[in-house]
Image 1 (cartoon, helix red, strand yellow):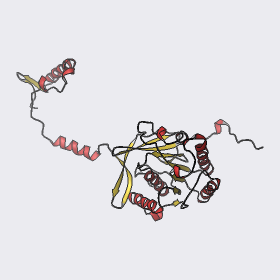
Image 2 (tube, one colour; image 1 turned 120 degrees about the horizontal axis):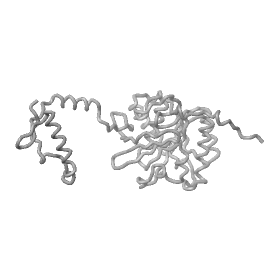
Image 3 (cartoon, helix red, strand yellow; image 1 turned 45 degrees about the vertical axis):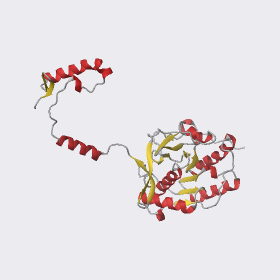
Image 4 (cartoon, helix red, strand yellow; image 1 turned 120 degrees about the vertical axis):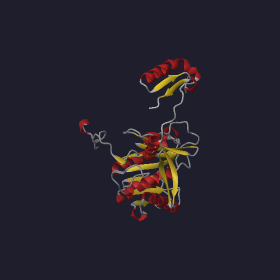
Length: 316
């Protein structure tokens, strides 16, 4: 009997100091994981955006860089092939790419069952031949006929995908549904079925919709998570693709505001009296001593003058 391979602990590869990324901050290199969310949360659009980015070496969502591009193998079990093509066309248009130059290989078989030994063998043979950098399976529910609530039935299928990742050095993305009405639960715990799904992932992406707002939450097993970002499915000319909604003030707007403020004439002097103070009534008693101290300091510095009807800004 052949013993198990072992390695002294001090010779194990240490990747903590140099985190490898398939897609920077979104997906770790050679990671397996889930894109999760309730129905109609754009999970497939996000999976295809990742596929286009990895295949072309362009930033995912026009924001997150791909350090080392490579071939992508995609199986879209829920959508007709012409719909997959149309979505890829839209994402390519948003990224300024031609789909003809994209190395995304689409499995066109009508079914693929991870719970059947023959289908698992065919999938592994395809991976061995094409050597993809990323495998995308969308969605998990169409890849089996097991009970997703039973850990004993889910775990072997996820273990097979983990074996593919280790044997062939590729990343694996599985699109999976979240429970309906689970908005108050932690994103990973809201995934439908067994808790094995959440535990399995090295990198997981969760999409949630609150009214009209769509948010993306990221978690990693071996890296810190980035802040939640807001996304929208934007249609621009022939492009239909997800994009990041940047809610930060734009530098140009801030500069314009600064210029307009500096160009404005100083306001005319107005009396500063107790009635003009912005302090709310319940806080006035404790805040007034500080106000008086500041008024006294400003008077001593010549910035305001005191008169019978209150304080005034000096003419200078």
